Length: 142
Image 1 (cartoon, rainbow, N blue to C red):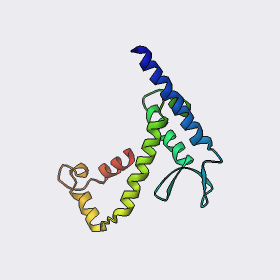
Image 2: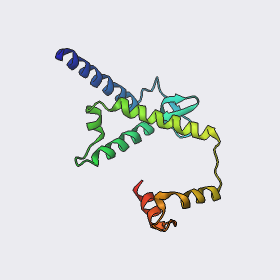
Image 3: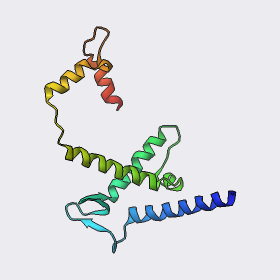
């Protein structure tokens, strides 16, 4: 039982390292260049490219997120932890999300957004009025 779990862990680590190596360094014969920016394309969703720099940004974001808990985490640490797959999944999910938003054609008027801001309890003072400092604090937190 323990040997089986250990074997699976080793396989996951090796596959993650291989995926990451190809994603970061590319394979000239298998990857494509995005003509508009010269970036190495590691995946495509419809005709929208996902580049190696998108993946690198995902790794940097994850490293910063994990570094908030005290210990500085590097991209190398993430690779050793087997985070290549989850980071790539997050990058792809983010790309899909923004593609869906772009295709949805949702639009809100300035008046509607201002009314939502004024009426949202998160940004109101004790008198029910918009507290601009609460809004500024919320924006800078995010």
